[in-house]
Length: 552
Image 1 (cartoon, rainbow, N blue to C red):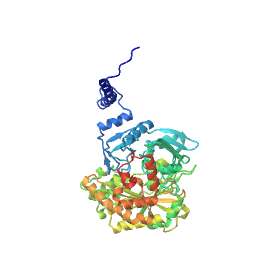
Image 2: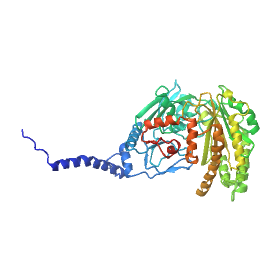
Image 3: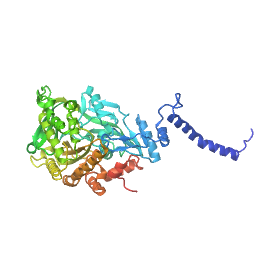
Image 4: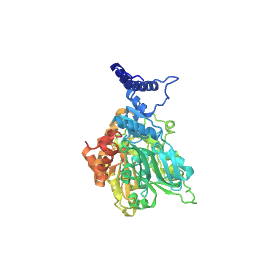
């Protein structure tokens, strides 16, 4: 057998060339075939995540993404839509390897756009399946991209429902829990506290499973993890039996609210106030379970008053002040649409806004009454049009029994806020919404506290016009309005921001850091974030300002 001659320098060079460039050329062909599809493409229409990531470098995303109120908008360079948990793992792995940002996002409803990133975004909307239902434990495991209303509908045949609902149903479960969304009810916790287990994909360790038994400290932080500790892919929620509620709506004077507040808070499972600036009325909405075998109340919502009578004050004001307005033109406008149209006549004129508020007061006085429905049908409400929102949460009492019959912190907060609005002549529209929850076991929840504690949530708003210049003027005015809350109320009542409504650039950085550190374990959060995501892959501009990682 002959001895093979050693390779020449030319053969060695050629071998190295093909070894290096053939894989690159092959990848290039695949990427080109995907970005320039023919009728008979070389590859399927959907590339594997790794190749999608590679292709995005040569063909960045050009589609803008905005939040619901269009107050924040970005065009992410990378914009991916995983269909499976394996896809999520692959995208996160690629971003971690490249040390490039890839922010998880849901429905992008948050008023402050905390899920948006110019660098890269990972939409969870296609992971929208129910994994399992345990009817005995009354628990459901669901993928993070499923919407709240979808889940509520899915649970109906099992006789189950979520413990509580926020104002809208379009949130995805991941965002619904990760930002600490809430409904109302002094004995009911925010949504995050109903999470009994979760799975999330971390840049450093891949998929991790968390529960009260598995990594309890991290689990407590990750339930309201803001998408910063990992991409949540599955959530197990504690449900309750599906039930019907009787909703009662009425108006009360401020004096009556002060007199009866502690009693109402204990008496009703769900209680919500809508304060109407520049009036002496508060709209009270109370919901309680319909007792088994009981007949629904006979009085319909509005006490039998027709829409024409309910809307008379708003319609009359519209016809008298809006040029060219006709009765036929406003016939189909809802209450919220009429209010929006009226406010847009002069959104920053304090006297005009007060006039609109008084017309709204008359609407609510004529809309008193009751209605009955299942909890997922009753607990939502129309928030109105596009708007700026600032919502804060603060502790009221260690227990429901400890809420005093007079002088409670939640009523003091509202009295002080209404007085500051008048003193500063703020053109504050209706409503200022006030809700309550019990404490949450989630360390990063704005209502973090013992299970029996009582917390109040208060939200101020400004509705936004369509004209860009007018929107800018309203935004400037709202920053002044928000400044009153930041400077006068939050320090006094130990309040913090709802995570989805914190605008970090509106608060001086050192003050922001001090307030957050006073209420949250920010050092522990940063420690776990550095461990799970050492390159800050899941971060964005919002996190950089609100919860920045320590500098190396």
